[in-house]
Amino acid sequence: MTDIISAVSTASGVGGVAIIRMSGDGCLELAGKMFAPSGGKKVSGFSPNTMYAGLIDGDGFKDFGFCVYFKAPKTFTGEDVVEFHCHGGTQISRGILSKTLSLGARAAEKGEFTKRAFINGKLSLSSAEGMIDMINAESLASLRAGSMLYCEKLNEEIKILQKELTEILAGIAADIDYPEEDLDGLNADKISVKISALYEKISALASSYSSGKKIKDGATVAICGKPNTGKSSLLNALLGYDKAIVSSEAGTTRDAVEGTVQIDGVNYNLIDTAGIRETSGKVESIGIERAKKIVSSADAVISVTDGGGEAENFEVNGALIKVFNKCDIAVPTQDCDVAVSAKTGEGLDELKRLVSQKCVGELSSDKAYIIEKRHYSALLRAAESLRSAQENVNICTADIIAIDLKDAWDSLGEITGETANEQIINTVFEKFCVGK
Image 1 (tube, rainbow, N blue to C red):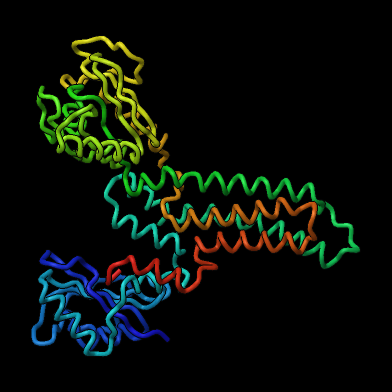
Image 2 (image 1 turned 180 degrees about the vertical axis):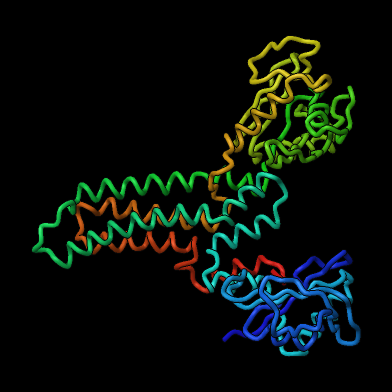
């Protein structure tokens, strides 16, 4: 028997409607103590999934609203759930929540509704993380990736990998328990091939984190080059509005100027850096040093030239895109990846395509990208266990190999929640707001 938890499940502040949600055994009985249906029907006789109009007791006031009952186990949490839909005033929702607490409900903790859903087998741990990623998404691509996670796409792939591991473990167990039986297919070479194939699949899945992290958090793109090559004009053109000051005077940009643009649904933080040149000015020198640090840490660097000289040399650790600017008045004199005109817009679409390609690659709408560091770490541990098993196939006994394979299975289980410990579970749900 579970206690009843209660919370305001809509955003704080004034709005059209607010929802107060309760979950747990007895929540319908509690609702009967504070809701008076307009039609005279008793709350205890409510049909599931039906909304009833009436007066909600807010402990000192009454509000006309609705009550709906969801019957376990066909609910989000897997328990009986009742919702009050009231007018969206802050004091109204607080008053109704307070009334539920005075009648025996307990204030829900962060993410407790979703945590109960996980505990009751309504969704996997990775699906819960996909839900919070969707809620917090700041770009279309991040929303899509979170949706794939929430819809159990990753969970399905992990289950397939675990099934393959289970089959190998079952074969090894049978060989250990019945050594006198010449069981077909249980030899080191065949086991090695299966482990190798699994290792490749898990490594390929883990490799998507490079793109997945940028899909979730966005990517940083530095625009750099010598003074007066049109870096600020290019930033403004990519953003679609004037962010940076544009001037023919060298050294106008003395500090980084930033702006965000979405390309194929991914957020890109564009940074216009100070023109890199020799200077005696202290302020400009500081800006140039800062520019070099930004360039070295960026996910991609747009190196801008305009035919007035060679491109500046600098340390680049991310992808490098060589851009020739001012193609409306000059012909490229150096090798470049794309020629553009910040003034006319020529070549900008191609530049955006290159930025997207260099940073995240070709995006797929039905692919389960690894966007959570926790999942990435678990996949790396699983791959390492498989690598160890592979190395030991020909030199260790079957029971030793089975230990590594079971470790790999457990690491994958941390993603879905099957083998996740209480600390991992609590850390996941601490990211949620109260009421979800």
